[in-house]
Image (cartoon, rainbow, N blue to C red; front, top):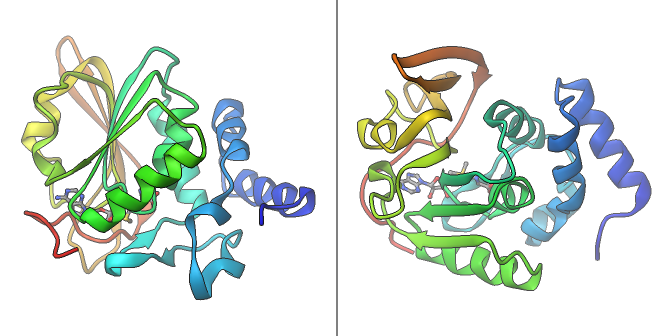
Length: 213
Ligand code: SAM
């Protein structure tokens, strides 16, 4: 079952009221029904502005945080984007409407398998899904115009910074996993890296190695 006009309108209204005002971000989020990425018990909460459990003990992020991160990433139509933390696939599906190609990595095979199936069902053919430890990035596809992490690192991982193009943007939560973290935006210029703090967030931690499922 897909969302109806009223659910969609309310969803977009909530995003705007939480600061997601960029028209391209809202347009991409309008094209992706979050209900397709939430299963089981929590399906009827899919349009609420809250994170929800998905398989492998992980979460689909809060829609307004997805919107704020997407807005800050400012993906351009020719961009090659790397996402670390595929989770449900929701964020990657939104990015696929904004950029040229999206690479998304998760350490849980079950999550990458399920999201790959969902992308095929949705005819989203510009997403490549990889099972692995995304903290090392994807050297064989680097450099990237945009990099987004949807799991919290204590500091921006060096290999990912190294894979960001000049003019590129990386958005990620940083801080201890059991505390409130800072959402930051890192911009690579000719002269180095600029850091901007965006807001407080709470994400699951970036974990080394492959997951059990
Ligand atoms: N972006 C996701 C979505 O739209 O549903 C939400 C991601 S969830 C908050 C964080 C994800 O990061 C989890 O699926 C987790 O398995 C993944 N993760 C944690 N550490 C990782 C790592 N080192 N490499 C790749 N994925 C990782």
